Length: 289
Image 1 (cartoon, rainbow, N blue to C red):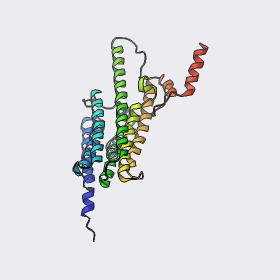
Image 2 (tube, rainbow, N blue to C red):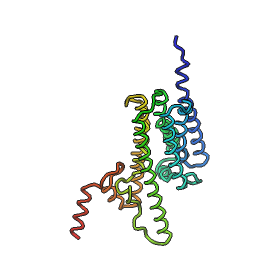
Image 3 (cartoon, rainbow, N blue to C red):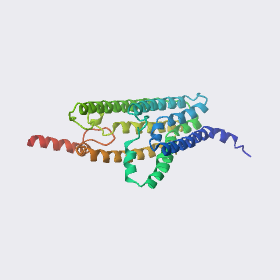
């Protein structure tokens, strides 16, 4: 009879991560009830995936080059996101995501309590574990580093640079806008449309999703096959971002009617040239004037 011990040893890092998941779920739910704020998962979003990946690297004795590389890349991702979230006041009391307040206003108290527990706390925390699980695939495979890993790492870093640049452009714009308003002047533009935002309405969202798809491909390279169940993490993250983007744009359009023209001209996620039909219309309008 085959001993189950080797299988249990192989599952040990996943079991450790599941315990972390349970702890984080309990913590974020209790804090949401105690404080009345619902951004506690947001505040840990850039931290717990880093921990999940390092658990796998640690159980491999920090001797698996691919896992160490994956953990280092995810750490860079987490450091960038933590810094950006902190400077926007996300960790301060009252630093709740404005979209949760909008949803609270649209839902009954009981309905939002259910939404908080099952979507904000449980679903999102499970998703944060799922996106890190390509590291589990790499842990199980234990295969050596390949040139494909180097290419994936370069692509990950490129996406990280794009996201960092987009966040900085957004930060600079918002600071200029606040300065104009403080000086009693109407800002020339009420939302950012320049730089990376001239080729994508959400270049930071695009780069964010790209990084987790690239992490999934690390697992594929380790296993030697694209057919990995851990695709669920990157796929569900993309679905979440699509829904979040739609909701964010709904709020932007309600606040800024001119946002409709921006939507008609610029692609939502994948950076690309402005839509041709809109450029033609603009040329026709300038000719008539």
